[in-house]
Length: 168
Ligand SMILES: [Zn+2]
Image (cartoon, rainbow, N blue to C red; front, side, top):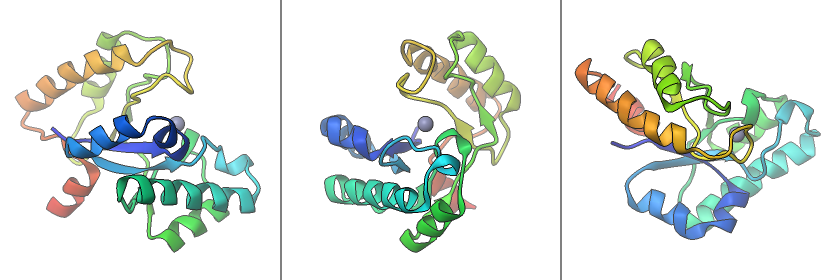
């Protein structure tokens, strides 16, 4: 099963081997920014620089030209939208999230996601606790097994955004 990982340029610079492993395992890589900017509170010039720098880091270190941008905190700005367009990226939101930045159990994450999972949906989960209240992403990792099993039973296939769009 493949997912789309929205990377931060800063984290790719800090953990290049892990970033490379995600690509080598066949997952899709997309952009979450260079830093973790809340775009609606970021001056336009800095917004543009954040996206350009993040896009370049992923291109140069992984050979990936990102198609998608998911804004931190789901907050966009006109400058961020313009920069996405100039870099050829589409802005991506989600239809379901696991509330997994909170300190909740794997069972609860799985319950929320499977309760809202539907054909054509986009599930947002987090592989890190870096910008969250929780201590680790272990609960998310455990929840994924339950979510995958539930989707399989219902005949819903889970795949990366790029593959889903190509198949549509
Ligand atoms: Zn984030």
